[in-house]
Amino acid sequence: MLVTDFTATTKKLAWKDFVKNFCPPEYRIKCDEWSKCRDAFSGEDAIRAAGERYLYRPESKKKPAAWKAYLDRAKFPAYCKDTLLKMCGILSSGEPEMQLDDLEFFRDWATSDHGGLVPLANRVIENILKFGRYHLLLQVGDTTQGQNLFYIDHFAPEKFLDCDWETEKGESYLTWVLLDDSDVVFDIRTKKRDFDRRLLVLGLDQAGRYYQARIKPEEWEGFDILNPNAGEVEYPAPYGVIGSRIPFFVFNVTDRSFGHYQRPPMIDLVNHSIHLYNSDAPYQQTLFMTSDPTLIRKGMPKNADDPKLGSDIFQDIPADADVKFLEFSGTGANAQLQNIQLMQADAEKMGVSIAGIEGAANASGVALEIVRNAQTAALRIINENIGIGLQNILRFAYQWEHPGEDRESVAEKIVYSPSNDFADLKASSQEIVQFATNRKDLMMTKEEMRSWIERNAGLEHRDWIELEAELDAESEAEETNNFANMDFNRLAGQGNGQEEEGGVNNASTVE
Image (tube, rainbow, N blue to C red; front, side, top):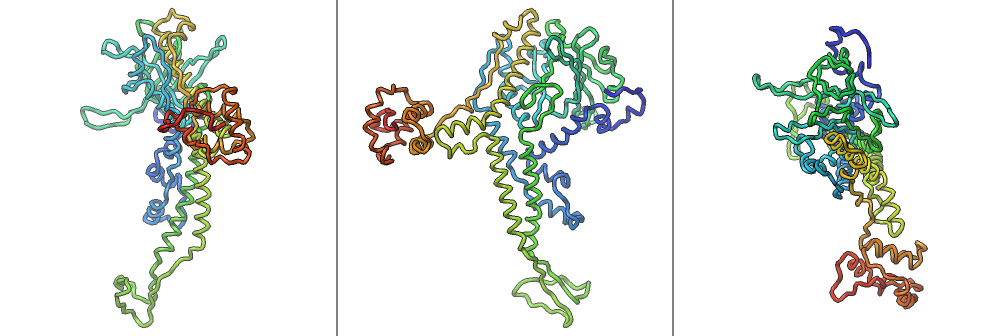
């Protein structure tokens, strides 16, 4: 924190100057990155509204009308938004395991905006995927007003301005946190909405007691963290118990470190999409220029009426005048298009790779399992990291309500474990057929193939001895590589509980 005299000049600091003086350099750098990600995931309207921030403005487009036409023709691809929807869908596909004891109200009412734990987890997932960081604060409700004992507030990445922490016996805990708590406030007298700039300080005072203080930005420099001396100071105390730790939780991509800023998982796709946006703008300009030739008039008086154009209109012009269309060469259009198509292919590959589905439709057998496991590994880390963070919040709340409980007892009563079902391999009928057909190319034994299909098609286990005779009878078909009489589609249907009429649920046909 910058230490200077508290002067009237400080009070006049603009917000950007406040951030420059009081926030860490890493925070200031990340703010630009978060802003770019927010616009990219919002889509084309947000990107276009930012104008020259994302689109290069050629010298020929300095005039407002020319620039607006150039800007409106450029297309921003939807790869970011589409990939985000896929990834959120994958990570939200399974229900978490929850054991909440007397915090059961969190299941359906975890946040101030009436959202349950699962919607809250989905919100954290979406923001981690967008920005690589998100923040939650455990708040104490007013039970006299019918509120639950606790609820959870959430803060966007740029709202967390700074903090400090100490380490004691291997445990790191926050000593103070500075948050941007600004909001638009409605004045009931003037019927107007005004932006109210304010800060929220979370701190431990001289006695180690947790408090919250809402202050103005100009009050921060003179604010005494150990003895809060400004703003509205409150000591949250459920059942009269004042906390000794700050219940503020940081979520990063792979950890929950207070001072660790990680790159957003999809920042490369964001940058690639902006490059595509800048490539498409001149290409659309080329198409416009080559498809809409410019009319040139030579030797005509400046006050002459605009000519009426059309093949059925007769034109009178002075003897020494000339009217013609100036056409532009489109030789560069093909090169521009090829470049855009290459970039689009890279973006599409990048998007599905991030979502963990690339190659899943074309791979077979062990290769399919390896591809899916490898591509969902990063998503599993995000999923498990968020799950641990939410579980920590719940256990913190429980221990605050029951200060006499030890950690082992709390761990048995409060559990939040996210589902990783999205990473489990579930083979489709086409994949099983391809797998069995290509068994020799994969250099797999009969037992390896039988085991894989049994595991991934949901078939009942059959001992090797039972199948050996049937396998011997099929050896001739295998030696000739002739599988025409082997009904793999029927087998796959049985594996999914879709037995055909007259069929027998038997795995021997693939052995």
